Image 1 (spheres, one colour):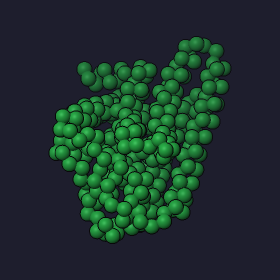
Image 2: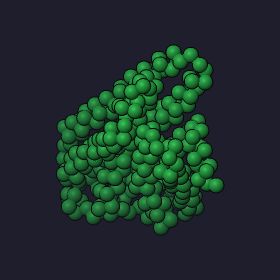
Image 3: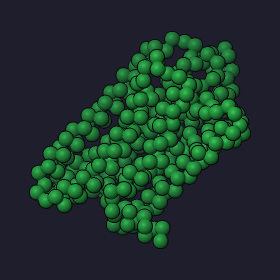
Length: 304
C-alpha cells in the first residue's frame, strides 16, 4: 500500500479462527448486545414515560443510556457479522464511520459523567439551590455542552488521523477501528501529532477526573454530616451507582490506553478492548437500577 488513497478496506483482528469458536463468539456477543439494547431501552422508555423521573438526574441518565446504545451498536454488530460470515474485512468508509462514532460516543459519555457528578454535588451539598442551579434550561445547556464537546473532540482527532498517509498495510490490530491502531499504519513520522493529541486528551480526561473527584470529596463531607442514617443511606444510594460507573469507565479505559507495550499481545488487546468497549454499556443499566428504588419501580411498572 503506497498511501491511504489506495486502501479500500481494512482487516480487523478476529476473536477466533476456528468455525466453532467463531460461532461461539457470535452467540456471546449477540446475547450481550441484546441485553444492552433491552436494558438501556427500558431505562430510556421508563424515564420518558414516568413523570416522577422527570428530574435532572434521570434526564442525564437517559442521555447516558442513549450514548451506551450508540457505542455498543457501533462496534458489536460488525464484529458479530464478521464472525458469522467468517471474514475480517471492513470497508474504508465503514472503518472511518466506526472510528468517528465510537470516539464520539465514549468522549460524550465521559463529559456526561462529569455533568452527572455536578448534579449530585448540587443535590447533596446545595439542596436549597438545586431547583435554580439545575432548572430545565440549565439541564438542556449542560447536555448540549456535553454532546457538543464530544463532537468537537471527535472532529479534531478524526481530522488528524485521516489526514496522514497510510502505508504500513491495512491490518488493524483490534476488533473494531480505533484511532491508535489506525495511526500505527502511518508511513510518516506522527510523533508530534500523537504527542499533541495525547497531551490534549490527557488534559481533558484529567481535568474532568479532578472535577469528579473534588465533587465527591465535597459530597462525602456533606453526607457524613447528615444526622439521620436514613438520610445518609438515601444520599449514598444516588451517588454510589454513578461512582461505580465512573470507576468502570476510567479503569477500563486506562488499562486499554496506558498499558505498556511490553505486555501487549493480540489476545490481551482483544480482552482489554472487550472490557472497555462492550462491558460498560451492558453493565451500566444494572449498576444504576440496583440501588435506585424509583427506577426499579418505574421499570417494574413498565414491564407489567
